[in-house]
Amino acid sequence: MADNTVPQAQSPPLANDRAAEIKTLALQLGFDVVGITSARSPQHAAWFTQWLAQGFHAGLAYMERRQAERVDPQRVLPGARSVVVVGMNYYSGDPVGPGRVARYAQGQLDYHDVLAPRLATLAARICAWGAEARWYVDTGPVLERDFAERAGVGFIGKHTNLISRRYGNWLVLGAVLTTLDLPADPPARNLCGRCTRCLEACPTGAIVAPFQLDARRCISFWTIEWRGRIPEEWRIAIGDRLFGCDDCLEVCPWNRFAQHAAAAEFRPRALPALTEMLTWDDRQFREFFQHTPIFRLKRGPFLRNVCIVLGNCGDSAALPALERALHDPDPLVREHAEWAITQVRTRRPKLHSEKPP
Ligand code: SF4
Ligand code: SF4
Image 1 (cartoon, helix red, strand yellow):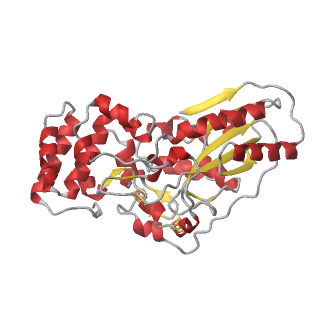
Image 2 (cartoon, helix red, strand yellow; image 1 turned 180 degrees about the vertical axis):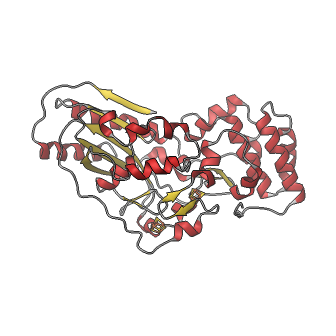
Image 3 (cartoon, helix red, strand yellow; image 1 turned 90 degrees about the horizontal axis):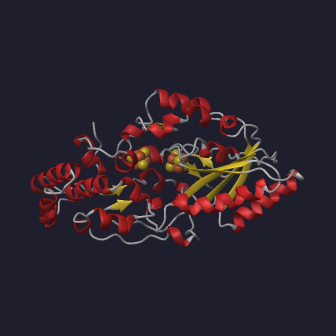
């Protein structure tokens, strides 16, 4: 979790001037959008509690851990009055396959590391006015998307991600909670209308209803969050997705406003061939992926994904590499390599996902 507290300093001056200064600084720091909202409970707090109760979070421990704080910012920062929400555009052109990687993970650096120093600078400026501030990137006990919608940064679409009218579906978010009382921006309103493209595009039916995502059915969960064996009924649905899935984001009509990211850290870099990565040991994996989101998955689960994609591609040229992987020190890799070999030998290519039962 990326969070930090900066100690209190002097007394706060005029709220409007402070808000304007914070926004100017945020843009100077390279954030593409910034908005401010009050620190009252997120509007979807009850929905979030119900979502957890239904098990839609797929048992993700970090979601469960600080549940009370997520629905009550006062538990995160007593006396919090405002939340400054920032977004950074990470759109980086069209992905290439096979072996598709979610756009946010195609760059050189993990977005947590891109946002963190900038958020720390923003929080330090606020603290210099005598207020307290705590900043978060994504995994802290803060429902950034809710605050982002209320701060006018974008609206939450039916796929449950944030959509910006200026950047489409491609923003990463950060938030600064502060005891400073700042004027709130008008909230964004939902602009999905009658569109249902994301629900129809989801290859696994994970968007079980508008605004309801069942992570247990989501390819991003299985290929990014889940570290163990992937049940066989999900492997074919994964298709050629090596790390994550952007299908529900890609089809959203609001992407017509997408712009290429200004931040160089988000420029995509080419991956070696899947069969080459399958030969990597821990050191080679670390050298290539350190500082990227893929590094957090670790070598074994990543090579598990490589095996699944090779199995689904069905190219017999991958057989020698897969056969070598049968002797991998990690049993997770061995088991998925064995499955992939069977797929290549016995089945037609599965580049297009098939919905699991
Ligand atoms: S990320 Fe992929 S699997 Fe998950 S909800 Fe979106 S389209 Fe469905
Ligand atoms: S694809 Fe359509 S329904 Fe889904 S989030 Fe975008 S606008 Fe909303």
